[in-house]
Image (cartoon, rainbow, N blue to C red; front, side):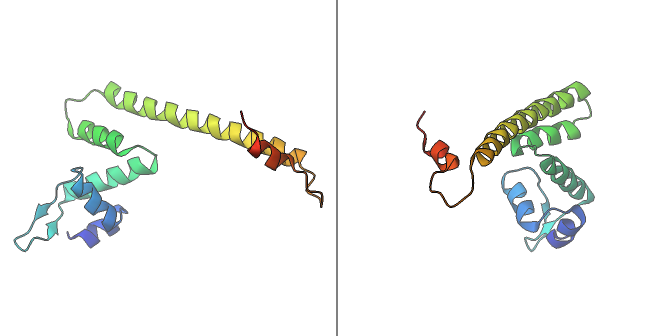
Length: 129
């Protein structure tokens, strides 16, 4: 398969596929004329990477997961540890976003939103800690 075919079938853009090759996540064969020649195994790896990235795994986490995927001697505990670590990061981000939302909601409620110049939103943003 060429890069256009594998991009369409995997759902991963050609530009991203080139980047993954550049950083060593995938290694497609090269034909005599230098074009990439993707095998079915490359397609599966790209689909795997696409799903992992959609779940927010970092490139390094993807590298680890891909190595585990390719290792028949892996232990599922290793995979679970990577996923649990990532889940903890997501939970921390959600908590941070919830705190941001609560602060902003409080400020919006405190602002009269009328024609007066005083605004608690601007006052809070300008406040030095």
